[in-house]
Length: 407
Image 1: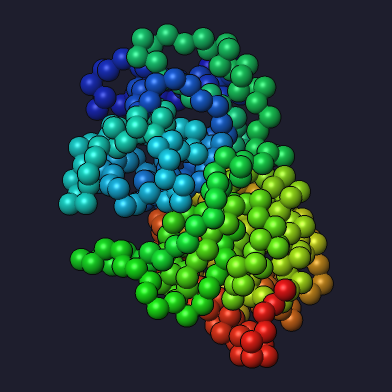
Image 2: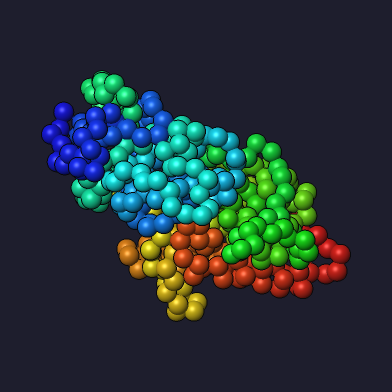
């Protein structure tokens, strides 16, 4: 096995036994203190630079198949609650495979907390390892890319390291993997809950102006809340929904959600239906995986990234306004901006690495972005995109003959 460059668990762990291991595919063994559920899981190790919103991150379906390394050391300090989970499928389990922490989880100190993070991790079968030199692990990922690994928590401290390394090396990884079936809804439903407001909580949309159909590839709840707050009644359909399924609901607009895995793999069944929906001329808005699959439907290509974009501090420039917005991101694949065909215009670009972050289809009310404008977690700089979507719907409805329905 590779000798580990990682330091021992910090003294704040009070010399507790090292009951967890993170074993990378190259044989690197990282030892720490086990937290959350016991057992083992395999996944791709990424890092997230957000300083807040760990509950939203751990419940984001886009993290299916991944083990999250938090670069911010104090995770768990505000506890968890029943309102901030982002998975729209409210099952007890989580899509994320595990998480890596630096400091011990402190007792929660927040008026909204209803539980301790460690208890919450156990209840959702999420394995965690603490006391890790997360800076060293992040530096490794930045240099070598996101490694496959096995994370394990065993109170006895006994592990079959050789088998863990072999399993990590044999795992095929996310390239070519369709993970959407693991996170999409099993049936259609409607949504009317709006964004959270201070001292008010969540209100209900009572007078929607529009009806939007959202296709769930791993949909986050705050996206639905943003749509409702923008004036929409939302109908959510499974990822396998056909264009006919969508159009039967007579929507004013169509939304393509975020989600996990390789867009080309999910696109084998989703892209043909997206192409049919584009042909209707209905306004369409995509986020993250929805952006990638819309791009594929328009003739572009996607590719796996070296280290991905995961955090709430990513600067993106909007070419239409010249504005630079700080955004929340979570993706390991990207649209190859050089592959964008004629008629597809780049609208946003990352100021970190120049990668594509948004497109629009010239001549049609169709657009998408790579990042997460719902800001859960993250800044609210990009909420305007939901307003932009409503404006496109409003303009499209004005242009349609009275009583007509797009098909």
